[in-house]
Image 1 (cartoon, rainbow, N blue to C red):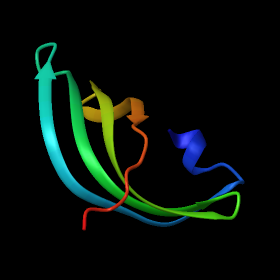
Image 2 (cartoon, rainbow, N blue to C red):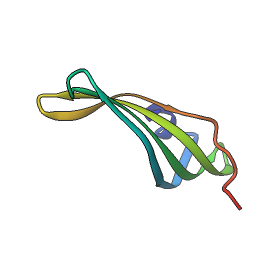
Image 3 (spheres, rainbow, N blue to C red):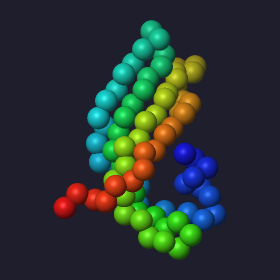
Image 4 (cartoon, rainbow, N blue to C red):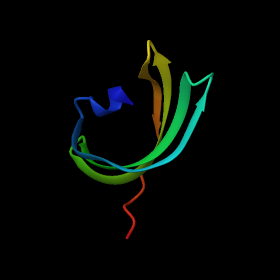
Amino acid sequence: LKEMWTAADVSVTQAKLVSVDTVKVFAGGNAAVVTYMMHDKFEFKGTPNDDYAKNTAVLEKIDGKWSWIHGHRATGQPPPE
């Protein structure tokens, strides 16, 4: 996910959190899976995109701080009318 957003072919103009939909904490409070919706505006190889996309983040608490372990972004959909 990080590599996608920082690639030379991508120019991001907006990354707005729309909602946090689920938070599942487990492993004695040391891990979590979060799903959330983003409204992203960006260009990919010069083509503009205006997407709503569901995302998933896997987090782990390391030394008392939450660390991003893995992320996934579903294919973007057009903004709701």
